[in-house]
Length: 202
Ligand SMILES: C[S@@+](CC[C@H](N)C(=O)[O-])C[C@H]1O[C@@H](n2cnc3c(N)ncnc32)[C@H](O)[C@@H]1O
Image (cartoon, rainbow, N blue to C red; front, side, top):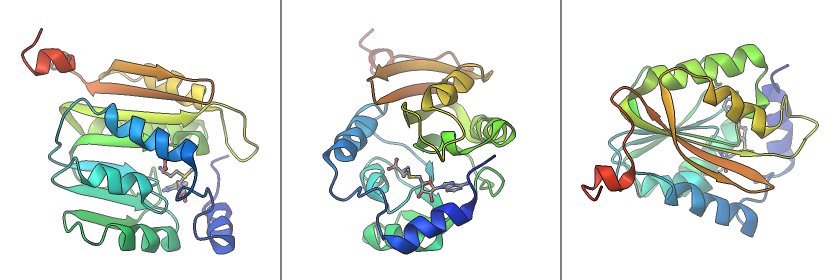
């Protein structure tokens, strides 16, 4: 079963920042690794579903001309919106993935600590919507915790195994630790190019 919205609403009712993203070195480092893995210096239009309180959103804001961040919980959306309010190119909205998918195309989508909340049908819809919304040549960055968690429908490795089977997505990078997987995919065709190839170095 997909983890219900009520579960997250209870978490945010108890604490403004349920995962303590503002203080944990683990997450600060992982967010830094996530933006460091972006193959391009700058993106035209980026999408971050499941943005929570906006800690990763604030980092992504520096790399995109437009950024849409959404979360299913209104109070998380309010905290994230306040965090990034100086960035007028960032929109923060309430939306439930995978069905309230925005009617836009993006050259960057970031799935960070989200895919494991979905059952098989919803994960398939999430990945199909992701592929459809990515412009040809656009980048997808996916990052997921690997260890078992009661309220997760699956471990992060299963999310990344599902990603590997999506036609039209070609993996260009993989960072593996005992705690999490971080992968970058390109929407193909056109054929995926490395950063050095994109920069004319190879
Ligand atoms: C573990 S946090 C990840 C936050 C952020 N992406 C990061 O990596 O730092 C998961 C977030 O996803 C949100 N979420 C869970 N299910 C969702 C859904 N179906 N649609 C949109 N957001 C969802 C939760 O409310 C929570 O804020």
